[in-house]
Amino acid sequence: MLDRIKQKLEAAFPGAKVQIADTSAGHETHNSSGAHLAVVVTYQGFAGKSLVEQHQMVYAVLKEEMKEQVHALKIKTRIN
Image 1: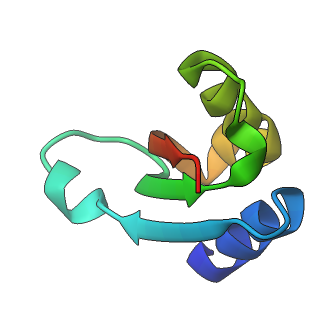
Image 2: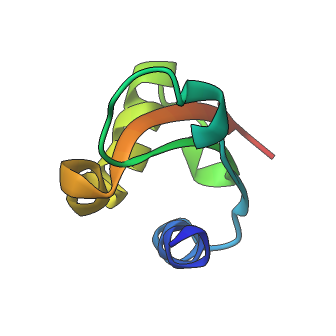
């Protein structure tokens, strides 16, 4: 799943550097279906966009995964 999500983000943001980590192990104490992920996307196309807009762009790419596969998504965006 992580490789597929990384590929999807890289395809949506050409030239971006994408780092992804599964942080689910730190959330075992509560019942949740789906993974807890942390992503860092460094992309020149974020220039001129607010932090909220940048995060919305990432969420838009992963909207299908957020329905069932991903329970929580921590996002960091940067401009290269």
